[in-house]
Image (tube, rainbow, N blue to C red):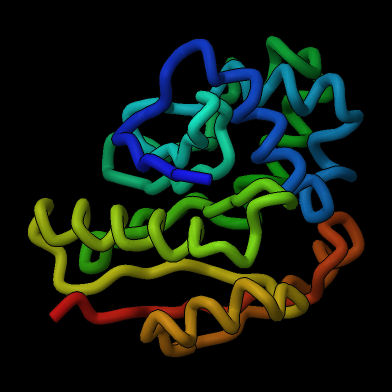
Length: 195
């Protein structure tokens, strides 16, 4: 099966993108952004097609995504207004507070990756590496000397991929009491030089 990497996200692929993103990150975000129907509606609303790369199979199906952050926004961040629209005033407010506590930073020195996901049937076939290569190219074009991402402590498969790609752990942050909401206790920041 062939895979093509595209800059951006075609509008007709937004429902698939929301599903793929939720499949990858719902385990971490489910208690905060669930139930599934609302989370899918939220991500379909907020995903920024201008801040990602798409991996598309021969049949036109979306098989992978790689988002990034810039000073103008993030791939799957959304706003208070988006949260309120999907979850209501009170539901949006507490969800937004918790998500902001998890972190909304932009790294001005390093290109910040904002989530990579590959459909289960396509993992282990090089799609993640292809998406990372597109992100490295984007970072270099924007003048960055390195890229950065965060990986949760129990995502061993992703961490192994990042280490094979030359990423090195630079710090680990404990979530404290937020671990009960997100289902993981810590995340590790990893950096890869581009030169």
